Image (cartoon, rainbow, N blue to C red; front, side, top):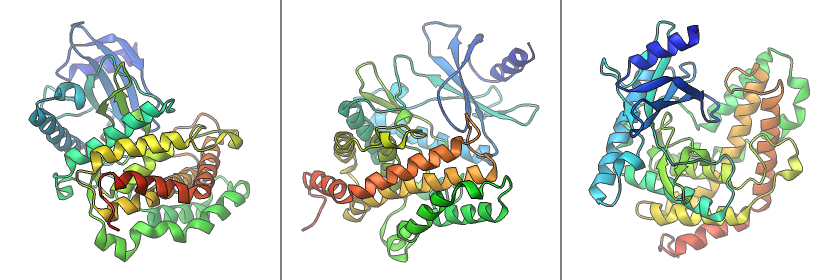
Length: 374
């Protein structure tokens, strides 16, 4: 009863007609707690209620300001085309009765509410080339619509989020403290990470910092952050917590990390981790169809670097959390983060083994749009 009363108090703060008795946990996110709620007016949109992890997102007002700015920009772009529906193609936040788009409860927890888009679905694992193609189009279009939004207008809600140099420093700090004495369990993982560390600093090199433009990117392009309609067509990109300035290759690499793997992100049986190359090709095709409108040649050539960086960096982050005692990611077992680390490093091994082919496929697709100069 206490939980119901607390949630009733929270939902009452928003301009909604949420049916508190219908609340159910929703989704598979690692960070925020998400619930689906029905609308008392059955013909209207249902709702998603989220408890924002303010230990990860330490400045919720700035995070919300980013989301509102990006949502407004995207809705305006969809409206300008005259061919889409901004209410279905862009997520919609629900304001509180007091005005802001978030609410802080008496326990100091932060909450937000958004519309739930009916007749949509997500996949944790990509099943078909058509789905991969639609995912590529979704994130390519997302970046394209935001390419004229100045990144200087957005707050860096998680500083150095994809700065692998900082991530490696965090790992070194975890190693130095080793609060649960887990270092003896991870020598092979640490050796692999250290062996590739220098090559992963590409985006921190002075030449790249001076050449590659910062753009507004998503920063969490897992395939399950694309809503597909009943025909498996991309409809809406969701989970905008981490939208910040960054390099387009970060988004491309993270998407490939989640769609090309025949196994799961936390695959126990490492032999199941193989590359699904048709899905890579399909995603690349869909992405470039949309992104070719703004990409320059240097950005295009950096995409393959993102493909290698993101699983490597995710392995660093999982291992850091494991050594620190699992304080960041939700876990389902005591060694879940170690399992995730090993799966990401195996995926990286597979990617390195097909590096030339992957890069050739990107460049071949780009030739259709004359994005590469001979």
